[in-house]
Length: 486
Ligand SMILES: [Zn+2]
Image (cartoon, rainbow, N blue to C red; front, side, top):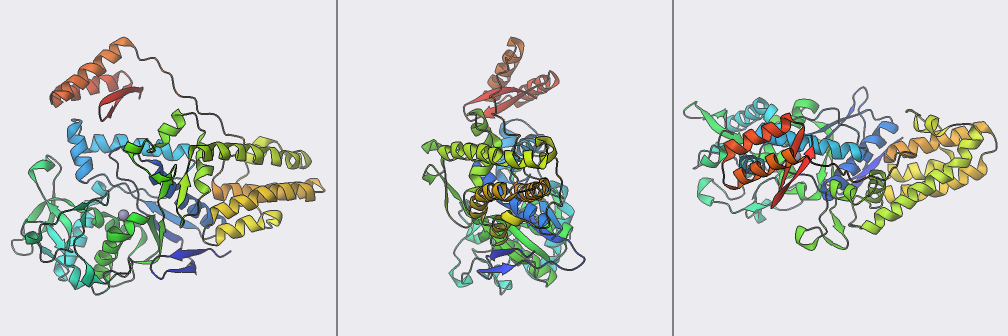
């Protein structure tokens, strides 16, 4: 079974080639853990989850690496605002990310490396780039990548390097105004950022200065971690790299420049980018009231399986309008599927538990479900696959004459449901958690908030620790906080 996908580099829909005797190696840029990821992030992760599942079903034996960005300007700034160590702060949000992933039925990646746990690999890469003449120490003591040293710069984003103006960005893709005097050219980007006063304790001994031999204190630039960690787990040349469309430039372009200059090999053979969604017809923004996290939707009572199905109604390369009424429609869709499978279950003599307990590999012959599978294999067309799935359930139900026929059809249905990651017969309404906060806990939380407001971080920290000990957690919002059971 061959999967075809659009490749950003060649701009063609290409067959994914699995190398004999090797897993199919995939790297996806993961979240920056400074707050809850929003549905725009999660639609991307859900799409890559469907790819991962589809690769599994098709026999590609995928090996999936998705990183956690746990150091950058935002994580440092917000951890300081909360009076938490960077590690404690990012751990909290990593946990939240994992909870949301589990709710949406995302399979865990095979490896989930964190940037701060792979500093040596990043330092080694910077030193190699300095040695090869691709990097230099700038006027501010940071190490920069010399974009003009890499002739292929711009090949992924398809632009002429001559047109480059400025592109120092942080992980949100926000452009910082470049100070041209710190570096040779405005397009050059930071590999290693020299320590600043604002960084507090978040500084590490870095690459050696080419002249003094002293290690440069600071922290890695964002682009560097993905080059270092992908090559650490997948080797210098791997099969597929993905992320949201905003990462294509400069993040992925810079990853290519760093990696290929260092190794001389093709960094990655296929690039996949997921298009952003619109929410209720508009770009998602807090001021428009259409900005949602997964928790927001669960609190509104939407079931995670319905949210997932709603996500899959959009093709990953087309702009998709996500709406709350779309989740309602997805919920009815799930019920329709469950109802549609009922006659097959009866004919097959299979219980719901037996059906949901089916484990891969499933069906050899997909029968009525072949079209749905073909849609997934052709550029991961999830909306077409869903359309076919609904009609296949009806058709299979009509066609099945014997218990064996029905069992075969159910195995085929289970194959598709696994690839799409849709858990049937498990969808429950998410009840908003109504947990009474005891008055002593509420009082501690309030004192902590006041301490934090008056910038008494030591007291705030101590009170947070006390709350944690009592089994409670405070989640800060911009203008207040929530107290939840830890
Ligand atoms: Zn990345």
